Image 1: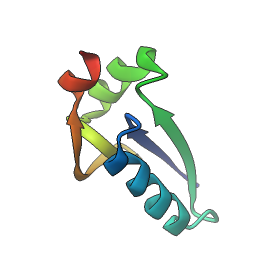
Image 2 (image 1 turned 90 degrees about the vertical axis):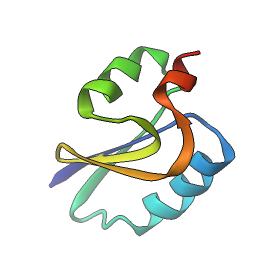
Image 3 (image 1 turned 120 degrees about the vertical axis):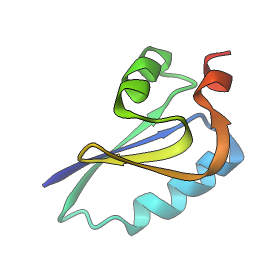
Length: 78
């Protein structure tokens, strides 16, 4: 089973993307984890190491998919 991590910061763009994307992931193939970087600030570096440049972003098996544009990780850090 593939691991998917959906990183977001709680902004309206991120929340909407979470609602849409997570419901469309095939749970028989993907094990999703939702990470709210606004409340889990200690995981920002993890997101950076994974290649995330902005949120919302979905990382599946090491591949990063940036979805729309809510905020850069620099903005999330601030």
